[in-house]
Amino acid sequence: MTDTVLSYEDAIASYDPVMGLEVHVELGTASKMFCGCSTAFGAPPNTQTCPVCLGLPGSLPVVNATAIESAIRIGLALNCSIASWCRFARKNYFYPDQPKNYQISQYDEPIAFEGWLEVDVDGEPFRVEIERAHMEEDTGKSLHVGGATGRIHGASHSLLDYNRSGVPLIEIVTKPIEGAGERAPQVARAYVQHLRDLLRGLGVSEAKMEQGALRCDANLSLRPDPSAPLGTRTETKNVNSLRSVERAVRYEITRQAALLREGGRVTQETRHWQEDSGTTSPGRSKETAEDYRYFPEPDLVPVAPDPAWVEELRATLPEPPAERRRRLLADWGFSDLEMRDVVSSGALDLIEQTVAAGCAPQAARKWWAGELARRANETGVELHELAISPAQVAGVQQLVEAGTVNDKLARQVIEGVLAGEGEPEQVVASRGLAVVSDDGALGAAVDAAIAANPDVAEKIRAGKVQAAGALIGAVMKEMRGKADAARVRELVLERLS
View 1 (tube, one colour):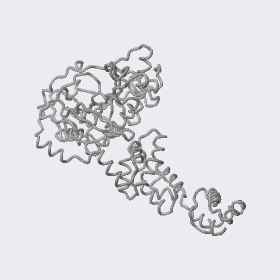
View 2: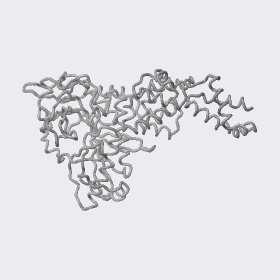
View 3: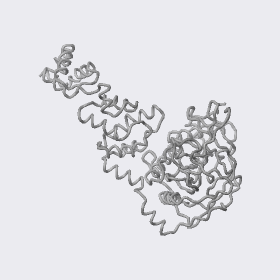
């Protein structure tokens, strides 16, 4: 059954949205949180398991020291206080993808708490308060087979892969995000994008959303106005792209608004994001902390970071994202609007890498924030998921600067690289895209264009040089865009001067 929705404009005019974002980050450690099993992505199912991560009787966990270090560095980058003493807890629940029937997590004693981030939303800063960042282990993965949707409903059977069970996670939880108003979806996207960039900068996670290394649970509630109590919230689980985070928040606003407008009540529940339809669907009723029966993990000692060590880790933090953007803005000579477009398209890292590969900043921006952003949008993927590297984009630009191809042909080169046809030079050769600069071939085409357009030729002879554009266009069309436009212009003027 399809939910009734209100138009976004009507929903925002009638209700004030409040968000809470919970982001789960898989740490880039070599081994799991409490055992020595590999965390490498893509291994055959159930080949990276042991008695500890399978929860077999008699097995005992041991904390991954690198994961603790990464958690502290993340907390510091989030402007959090770092706990001088904290414990792990058991979060008790039964799911087939959690073989112990509990998850080792942190409850009332997180390793990092009371932080904040300032994110850029359409060129304006927006402060997001962080409640906590705590350590835990990931669950396994269920694959539901035989149904039409990939969900358990309608499936004939389910398969379980425990490779991911026990992978170190950091869960970053915001305080209620108020005051975003109609910009709530953009704020959600900007926050997750800022967080992803920060984590990559720290080197603690690749934060690849398409691989589930960074997942966002988006909590959303509505209230009549900012002075009213918080409404009943829903939690849209495991949203795994920036575009989907924005769309999921926007959809839930319109769905809940329609429900409230009709006199209904919002059910506190988890919901699933349906990428194909851009909607959410009901999951299960949302548990409270009491339902999980938290209690201290008896098999692990408390974590008590030495303050001196914490300060040493603080000194290793990289340049904050906001400062980095300001530096690159100055280094590259972009306008504020150009930099906002770059950040909103997710192209900042890619442009920096392209510049490092020898491309001019403005040229790198042109390709990533223009042609490639358009292709990513058309195919519904994130920019970094496109099958072209910064070095290849720099290679395309080098071909343009060498006169081998023009901008129009360069787009075909990019198309070939994306299609897996090889490096830019190989695509030029295999598709025959090189610009024709031979005066013999160009001269013949120019003569033909002059003969076919005598009125234009007369205007040029009379001194109206701007009319040459019509003849240049005719030559370019005749040569299917492969002519050297600058040389064509020279030949036209030579013949008609």
